[in-house]
Image (cartoon, rainbow, N blue to C red; front, side, top):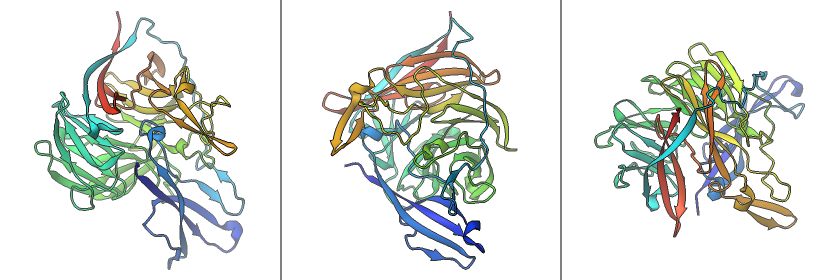
Length: 431
């Protein structure tokens, strides 16, 4: 059985003179960091409660990013959820391509298979063509392969010591083909050298990234999509961090809609950069915003509604009987050297009902979704400055994320349930 992930909500209440003036913060934390309620000397009460156990399975694999719990402002007196910030309204760009003769071409580059590839959560490539993968089934190691599928090495193992992991959350390839691996359980980033994959250094990460939401900016700075407990940064989804200094420089961004209980996924973002600015995309709304991370200023914003993308309440369960399909979402994005934004969007396939197994539990209906068959991937290429659609294409193959600046990966299980991962090249073509 896949491992369960225990999470807890820690309710921090700052008590004032009357109950009407009491406010509360819901803070994401791991179970085990403290279960007992305690009153600190500064008058802050902390209560840790068990929220729920999440079990990773084929119906909720890494292809569908999930958020176990997230920060909300909650009024103890009124008992109502409110937004952390005023939401903005952006124009929706048209579905018509400005380049009518352009198309997006997908070409398979290589395919590798093996039991260690089961349910890859992330796949990255370095300049030498080596592939780095970690799996939801074992988020304590990173497997290294060459382009032929030969396994070259295994990085890390379970533990809390140097070079060890408890729960990998994200990774990326840095300068000189160094590998940066983020562990949310240890709140740590570990950097491994390119030659022998030995640990070069590690640093504390002051924030836990949501759904792999880490973006590298320059040699020492990263932007993290997460939650902070500071009054100035609370409710803001993006945070500029210097891991080597364990320093939070600035919080910025904003909510793109009001967040209701059960809809914490609306706080998650897909992140990209043109080298200077940060592109933040609300995963479940497809709202694109461009931010200056140095000033926290919003530079541009727009919405996109490709065919098949239907925003809805996240607490609505998939239902064949009521014709409620799997939720649409943005899984990844990047900006190319020409300043074009490439977005991977997962939308329900036209035959999604064939890939949903209905399980009856008394009078209730539960659905187990095959994330491979129930989804298609829409690839959008957008002119960021002009906020116009250059080209778009819909593929039957599911491409969860970018491997590098040109490649994506797909996953399936072939005969005998043998895991198989393929690397594809995506290119914008014109006559």
